[in-house]
Image (cartoon, rainbow, N blue to C red; front, side, top):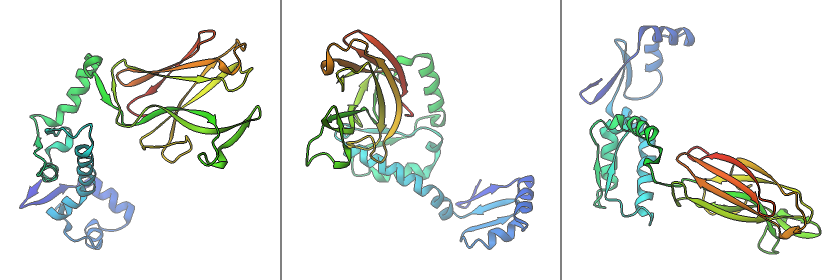
Length: 278
C-alpha cells in the first residue's frame, strides 16, 4: 500500500512473532537500530519512504536499461521502434519511467499493453498449443564442440600442446556451430564435419559446450559450460584419419537435437540440449 509516496508493507502477526523469537528482540527496536534511513515499523506495517523503495529496485532497473542500451546499439536489433513491457514488473511506474528515460533520444516508444502481467502466462499457453508459433530465436549463447587442431607455435598456448601419434595438436579448442546473437530458424540445421584423430580409432566421444561470452577460444575459458556429450561408433577403420563424422545441430522450439554420424558406416548417435537454459 502507498500513502503520500511512501510504501506500507503489512507484516502478519505470526511472522512478526517468529522473527522476534529468532532474534530475541522486539522488531520495532531491530528496525530502528538498523541505521537505515526512511524505514520504520509501526502498527504491524513496515513503512518505507519512496527513496528507500526505489533503491530496492534500482539494481534490477539498471540491468534492464543497460540491456536495452546494448540492444539498441547492436546492428541486428538497432532498428527497434517499439518496446512492449510485459510480465510482473511491467506494472511498476519506476521501470516504465526508467525505460522511457533510457530511450528518450532514440525515437523508440515504450508501451505497456493491457494485462501485461498475464502476457508471459498467455504466451506460454499459446506456445504449448502451437510450438511452431515462434519461428526464429536469437541465440543467447554460442554452441560448439571440444576439438583438437594442429598446434601452431606462437598462436596456441604452450600448455594446450599435446601429441597424438607423434603429431603436435592443440587441445580444448572451442569449435563453434552457433555464435552469440545468431538468428536460428525453427527446424534449421547447423552442420560441422569432424575427422578421426587416430588411424585405428573405433569410436568418438564428442563433448558439447556453450557460453554466453563472445570470442571464447577454448572450452576451458571462464564462462564456458559443458552441456552434453555424444558417443558414436566408428567400426570401419580402413579410411584412417580421413574418416569423417558429421555433426548436426537441429533447432526445435526449446531444444537442440544433436546427431553425430560416422559417414563411413552411417552409424548414428543422438542427444538433446536445452536451448533455453543450457
